[in-house]
Image 1 (cartoon, rainbow, N blue to C red):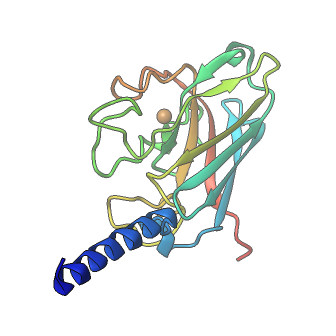
Image 2 (image 1 turned 180 degrees about the vertical axis):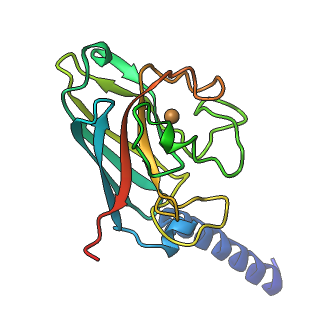
Length: 199
Ligand SMILES: [Cu+2]
């Protein structure tokens, strides 16, 4: 082997080694949320149709997406022992009885609804949650399709935008496929998402 070929071989194998070592230490996920405020938080009071307080919703911005925790009790008899669809609705308003004041799903890109839909999901979509037989609800969900706060480029929407957002729980399960809300039915609980910062 000539000197030139030996040098070339060493250079190529060096590249291969550096490529492997790069893979073993992954870089932070480079998405918009990284430029925002990891650790920022928001919360909301979860209310039922009779305006009673059922519990709370808390949201934390991570470097990739938002973690959502729901803690509640006293959900109505007909909601117990069942799965329920839960979504992020586009207006922070739970003021009317059927919670239609929270408007529709956050969905600026007009994608179809459903985590299992090839033409979805929309930005509002989340996994189903389970209400226990005693009416309690403890759930933790994660989404990379929204962020909490900051400039909205139209594709990754902010929850704490001008008209806010709401977390809405539906009467039935979300089939994660059919339009417009996976057959999840009426809205039974709602929380206006508000900033938790001390300002
Ligand atoms: Cu909904």
